[in-house]
Length: 228
Ligand code: ADP
Ligand code: ADP
Image 1 (cartoon, rainbow, N blue to C red):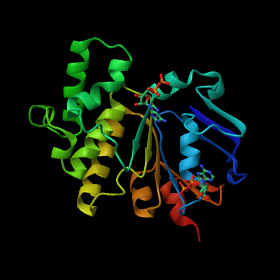
Image 2 (image 1 turned 135 degrees about the horizontal axis):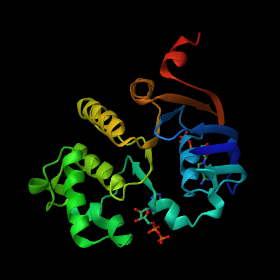
Image 3 (image 1 turned 180 degrees about the vertical axis):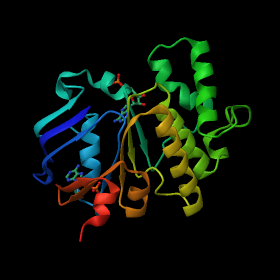
Image 4 (image 1 turned 60 degrees about the horizontal axis):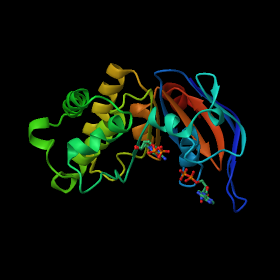
């Protein structure tokens, strides 16, 4: 459903961060982009929702060239989770999750039910946490809210940029397991960036290895491990 054809990104200072990359992500796949810092992972991912416009080549979603789609609509159909969760500190957890559905003009009752369902999905009791403020939650709990918020408007695609990078190993492990469960249940297409091979092998249906703006290999964890 996501297709890159010879996509490049040259930043305004002339730096080529992504160099003619081609790949496809089928519907429902969990794709992990891995590579050293500066290899072009974030740039690649951010081009999917036009947070960063690409310079050359074609990116399409369901056969539609993304440059021909309305940018706000494109973003609302793509959930986005990053390491610095960016919950609004003056909004309650419920309100933080409700923002995108509200923007979409959903019915109030429907949003309320949806927020509850999402909190349960990420293993937070809505009665306990819904009315709290972000600073009253641990880092791991806030990250769960980040995932719930990204899922709020039922996007087809979820972009995750090192979402668990700042968490302690035990919490990270729990959230990884939960994300695998969620993915199996919701069958979202996920593009997940990490520089941690263990995380990539655990989560990815396929792993794309990037270096210096190039895509070196894209394959299943089994095949990646077979490489000499
Ligand atoms: P990664 O996610 O793999 O760490 P990035 O996609 O963030 O890599 O960055 C790839 C390269 O592009 C890096 O060398 C980075 O310094 C450069 N880069 C990122 N953003 C910009 C920018 N706004 N202007 C110029 N160069 C950038
Ligand atoms: P508009 O262009 O109408 O202002 P927004 O930028 O508010 O549209 O986008 C709608 C929603 O999409 C936002 O509430 C936000 O959650 C999400 N969103 C906005 N920008 C980005 C982005 N760069 N990456 C991922 N999600 C985004």
